[in-house]
Structure formats: structure tokens, C-alpha cells
Length: 341
Image (cartoon, rainbow, N blue to C red):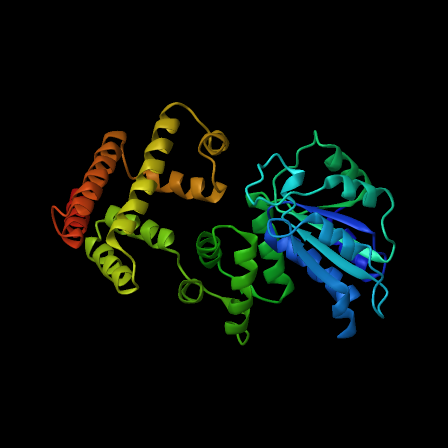
């Protein structure tokens, strides 16, 4: 059943004894968790009926013991099981052993006064395991998988519209870029923007630029764009701002190496007829990163990318061996690169 449909049932008081929230989209998982809390926790006393157990830190037995306990005062006990890695093919690195036979016994006869929820932040489970087959049979499955790019855009636009705001196309594109098309980041930043734009209900590009924090990777992306445009002065200014913020030159250079390695991969794939979806299958990562890389790689030819990547790797060696000042090496690279463009 869809997330929204199940949340509507919960609000109406129709609770299932077992839920499996499967997927890597934290925002959707948290939305479902909050819906359960809103329905079950009405008073301070009800808070005594909630418990959460991280399977990387404690055993499954404790969660099941809680699930089998009668609720105090309230109607239901809410028990969350976080990071149930025993449902996947993941190797046990925590050193904690879980007896899934106890869970099988519970699933066959669950407590009707307990809502037991498994929050599985994984793309998929190990379908070969008996416990996975039984859990999927007994639980209400909630899809919290990451949305496709188109769905994230549509969802974000709908939220903005529903709240009575308008956003310019330029501001929307920048907003998606700075939030990496990640729904959790998007919703968190929208709250701040809505508050700032509450008077006019208009979200502008300048507003997004000033309010949404930029990661080091975003600043590196902007730095490359400045240099490509022949604006070495802006690239140097951005570099010095990053130093003032406490960033290290070697780290900045390392991220540049990673970005140009990606651009080189994309260029080679383009020359061999790869489409964007095929590139994503090979390279992995977030689809939006591939999309932005495809836009950026247009400014370079293959030999140029090889040369730049080689120089960045050489500069990394010079910095780490102390042959020259790290700052001098990096500034010379920007000036040389900018002049060449």
C-alpha cells in the first residue's frame, strides 16, 4: 500500500500490528514514523509506551520483549526496530548476534496491543531468507524507496504550490542543485525558505543562493564553472573564502580530482554512445550528479580533461611532499587553467 494511503488509515485509527518500512528515503520513513507517533502518543503517559532499538547496538530479543509487554494506560505500545541488517545480505560487523527464530515466533502470533515497526533503510532485502519471506507476508509494507528525479521535482513543486508559494524556474533549478535532489534536504531547506518568503510568497534565485548552505562539493562545482568561463578572479576568491572557512587545500584539490575523474569518465562514455541511464549504471551515485556532470563536461575535450586530471594528481603529490607551498600550487593551477580557457 502507498505511504499516503497507510498514513490516512493510521489517522483514522486503523493500525496494523506489524509494519515494514523499506527504502533509503529518510524523509518518507520519518513521515511515517511521525504519523504513528501522532496517533499513539496523545499524552505524556503515552510516551512510556514507545521504544526504539537499533539492531547495530542491541539485540532483537530486547525489542521483542518490549513488543510483548502490555501498554501502560494507553491503547497501544509502539516499538521501532532500526537498522535490521539481519534482513539483508549484509555481513554482521557489529558483533551482535540476533536470534531470528524468536522473531518468527512473534510474527506468527503478534501482540494486538503493540505496533511493531521495522525501519529498513535498504534498497532491497535478502529474499532468500525465511525471516524476510515471513515478514513480508505478515507486515504491511511501506515503500520508502528513493524517488526518481522526475518524482522529486513534481513532489517539491506540489509542496511549494500547496503552501501558497511561487518559485522562479532559475531558483528552482538552483535549489535542486544545492539540495542534491535529496528529499530530506529539500524539505528541511523549504521550511527555512517559506519562513523567509512569508510576506511575498515569492521564492527568488537570490533567496535560494543566500539561504541554502553550499557543501564543499557545490563550491568546487562553482569553482570549475568560474574557471571555464575565464573568471579566474572569482575562482581564486572562492578558494580563499574556503580557506577562511577552515577547508584544507589538499582536500579541495582531492575533490577536484574526483570531479575531473568523473568528467573524464563521462566524456569517454559519451564518445562510446552511452546514454545518461547507462552512465548511471556504470558509475553509480546520485542521478543528479551525473546530470550536472554531463552539462559541465561540454566545456572540455578529451585530451584537455586528461591533461587537467594529470596535473591535479601531480599537484597532489607536490603538496603532500612539501615541494612547494600548497596554496601557491593551487593558485597557479587556477590561473593557468583559467588563462587556457
